[in-house]
Length: 171
Image (cartoon, rainbow, N blue to C red):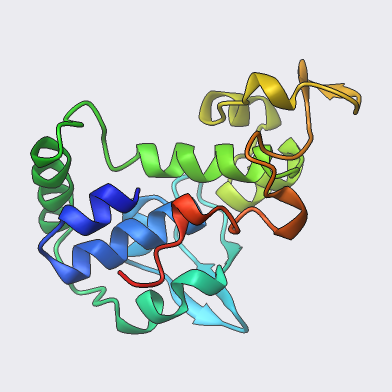
């Protein structure tokens, strides 16, 4: 994530990438949100149900400065150019949504909560978004075959955002 943000030349696209990673929102939702009481308010979502998504503290400045008038294609092309430039051309912008889900689960979140944040109507569909690290499969009873525990890097007690790999506050 850091490599992608650092390599992108378009500042507004950088903000969109950070918002996508830290919120798990789709690009269309990022371009249409409103903010109320520390949450993104999404009135128009893919599944048709409005929802609230908590705003991660690390993206407060990105949210405040993000220009929602930017064309969707501008952000998509910036992402495509950036990942090709850094040799990760196989990635898509939507993969940031999957990364957000995986980080939440690997930090100790349960599938129901993560599914709710991401706007999944069916709890089984969250399994498609999540990659559980094998080292997390211990101690607690499994849900859908996966044990929910801290992430393999040991940052879960301080919060899922405490991994320095994902500290993008400078971007």
